[in-house]
Image (cartoon, rainbow, N blue to C red; front, side, top):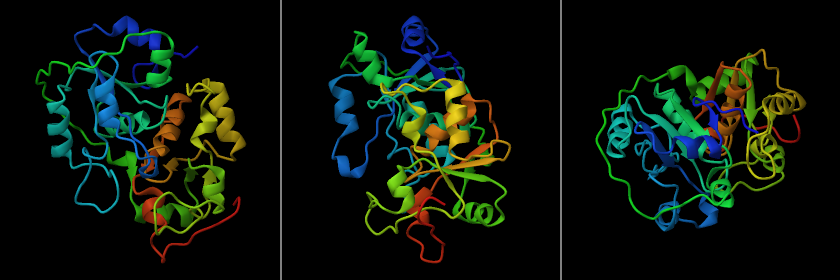
Length: 285
C-alpha cells in the first residue's frame, strides 16, 4: 500500500477521496517514445480521469533547443500552466497512461519551477481504470489562476556540469535506461546517437523501481535497488536517461527515500550521445 504524500506520490484511493476538492488539479502527462507512433492528446480526448487537463510535454518545452522537451523558459511555463487553469495554491496530481512513466517528468518540472504541492498518481490511468473508477471525455471548465514560478536551478544540470561531475566523480550519475542500452548492446530509439553511457555512471533501469502493475515499490525496496546498483546515496545524485523523461522516475524515487540532493540532466543521452568530443563507456562500468 502506497504511503500517500502530496509532494511525491499518492494512491488512487487518495485521489478518489480528494477529486472534488476545489483546489485540486489533475494533469494527464502521457507521453510516448517517437518509435511508438501514439498520440497522447488524441488518447486523452477518448477518455481521462474526471477534471483532468492534458499537459503536453513536447509543447511546454524550450522550442529554441534542438533537443526534445527541454525545460521551457519560465515565462512560457507560467503562461501555459495558467492556460490549463493551474496556479498558486493548487494541489496537483499528475498521471500518465502507462502507470508511472512520463508523469514523473512533469512532477520534476513543477518542483524545479518551485511548486512543491504536486504528486504523481501511483499506477496512473491503468490502475484507475482497473479499479472501476470513472473516466470521462468532457473538457474541464478552465478558470484562470496566477502561477508564480520560483525556479530551483540546482535541480537541473547541463552537459558541461555533467561532464565536470563525471570527471571529478563527486556525484553519482544514475542512468534510468534499460541495461542493454546502458551497456551499448542495443540501438538507441533516436537516430545518430552513439551507444553506451556516461563514463562512471551507474545503471538503474527505472522499471526496477516499479512493481508489475507499474506502481512504485516501497521506500525500503527502492533504497535497496539503488544500493544493488552500486549507488553511494551519501553523494549528490544526477539522474539521466534517453531524453530526460524516465530520469525523473529516479528523481522521484530519490525524493521518496529521503535523498533531497538530486538533479536531472535535461539533455540526457540525446545530447551526450551526439557529441563526438564527449567520452562514451560501454559494458557494465
